[in-house]
Length: 92
Image (cartoon, rainbow, N blue to C red; front, side, top):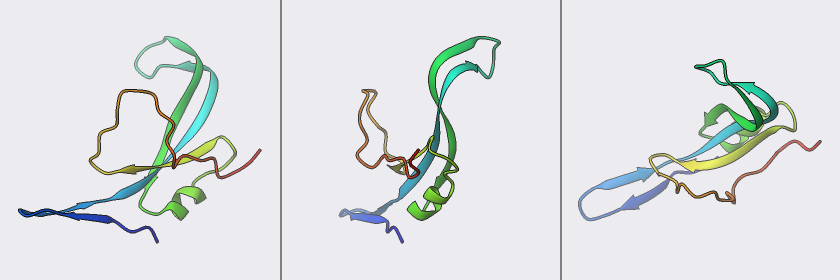
């Protein structure tokens, strides 16, 4: 079971929760949701968010699904980055 990381300061106790996000990699032509424009290239679809890593892995249906961890309430940089916790649980 994944555990929450707890940070304590002098004025209040804050709990930071680690969550597991599941997405699906797709490539090809994709219709944008609010227009008739087509996007040609690589996109990923949000598939779900889970409190347990094992639940996230179970949600992966084929090799195109990936999992990565995120901390609730934590903003990420606008810069492209390689998330160390990201992985594809099902091989081709």
